[in-house]
Length: 246
Ligand code: SAM
Image (cartoon, rainbow, N blue to C red):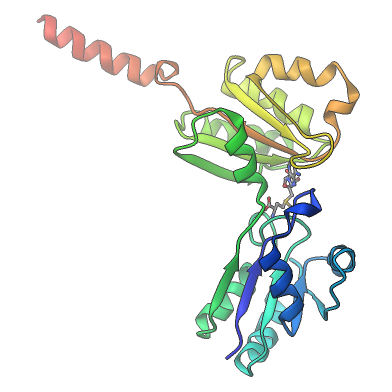
């Protein structure tokens, strides 16, 4: 049987494509790509010629069956997205699930992933984290989601686009609190990589000081709720202390 290789590609710096990724992409019968132009450009940079199949959110459930048939017939396929690790806020879930269900070996060629890259440079607690992908794009829905996450003690990570980063940070400051510490990481591994960790309120200001700061791709790494910020806990501790006094 063929194998399905889930291959991570660079999130900015082309030097981050691993030698093994290159070998696998050169060797497979075809590469399923989120956008064949984007992957075509990456491959031509490395001098790799390959057959490309478009696999994106609009067609992946439809074509997964056909691709599994090819895998079962003995072809090997690679799955890539435009940047980073497939399936992480990117297409591929339908194909991976269908392949596994059919007994096709699914192998990883790990590599860049913006959520892990941002967490690892943020200086915020990294032992536990919750990845939220993209928050809802509409303000009301985004604020409700943030409210639902406000008491979570784990580090919270979200992806955000340049045209919503300012609104999103403002909502973080208003819903999670002006003093909540956040790492704003932009353009990771690229020429203008920047990561700044500060309070939500100060980051909102920082963003307005230079219009270049709202450009590019963003990850927000948000420190989890502190114990002291939880009124329920404060009350609980008080009750315990009072009961000791009785
Ligand atoms: N699959 C990708 C991964 O493994 O990280 C994520 C794909 S998602 C559609 C794209 C989002 O990831 C961007 O809007 C941004 O939030 C984040 N992102 C991707 N590359 C980035 C980079 N170089 N710097 C900062 N954020 C990045």
